[in-house]
Amino acid sequence: MSFDTALRATEILLALAFLQQCSEHILGSAAARGLFVLRAGLSLLLLFGLYSPWVLLALSLHSIFVLHRFDGPYNGGSDRMGLLILYCLCLARLLPEGLAREAAFGYLGVQVVLSYFISGWVKIVNPDWRSGRALRDVFGFSAYPVSENLRGFATRPWLLWAMAWAVMGFEVVFPLALLHPASLVAALSVAALFHLANACLFGLNRFLWFWIASYPSILWVQGRLMQGI
Amino acid sequence: MKKTVSLILPVLIPSWRFFKAVEPSPRVQWAVGGAEQSQAADWQEYQPRPQTLSIGRMLQRLFWNPAWNDALFVVSCAERIALGRTTHSINEIETRVRRDIHAAGKGGQGGTFKFRLVFVHHDGGQRVEDVVFLSDPASVGDPI
Image (cartoon, rainbow over all chains, first blue to last red; front, side, top):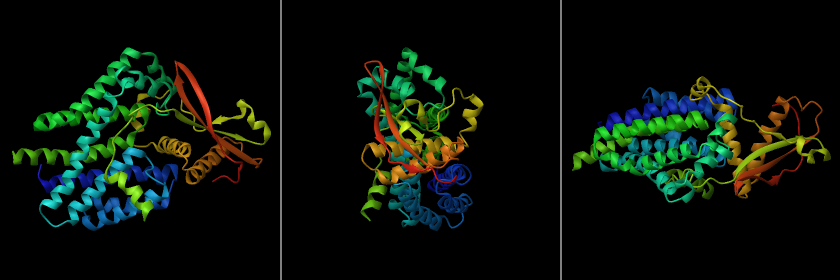
């Protein structure tokens, strides 16, 4: 994937993720509706590729007001990933052509790899995760299961033990997927399915859209690394 | 400026430590009225989850999930209150609880309400609930 194609693909996916987020604020929860009307307008310009560098800069400045409005991210990790994509795109469009632009966009790709590896690592060193106990607690009493019936999973320890190891195993070996384009595509497909499952079981829908929006960066990073070898 | 830096820095250098450990989980409960609200039965859960959710509804929520995302923000606010970051989070929760009270048809007679944060965890296989915060009375006010 060329640098320009990856940048444009990321812009389109980020704009769509922002529009999904904005629609929920404007038509649903009414939390800071005015701020999200502005973000929606800017996201439409980004979607159609109009004035991209300046739109990205405006979205970046606007994001500071949103962070202040909610005293931090509204939706934790998904908001943070959305803004990381935004800031990296903004730098990649505004910096002079050359290594600095590539470094800004490459940083996003590196962070995507770390997002899987670190979250797998912190789990695998925790005895509660290795025994399956942590995932039992997630289903048993955490605020995340979307229905009471899903709490029944907490009574199936062997299933949760297998699920916990599948998640941890996938996350910690994710960096190895960079060794070949086909393995990276396969790993990103599995990762997207993982986010889909989290969206269905725990209602974390925004994670799915923002992480998918970050995938062109890692596809480009992988190609760039292969070029260099 | 310092505040802005503290908000942006975790975005630029994320920790990615999702579910490192499963901490006690907050529930927001509210009660309308005066002294009788100390009775357990008077406390209503904020935005209780449904008993079941069909696969179709789960898939639809991939695209449209505002109530759940707002409830997750309330969970974040509850965790911030437990960490001592209170004023903003208390206001955010009060606004939403007030809306919940009117939606439940309990705002008609005016008066005041309180909310409390109950943190749930397991200890030796037993479910334990700790009340870690009780708000001051706030006006039920008008529907928003």
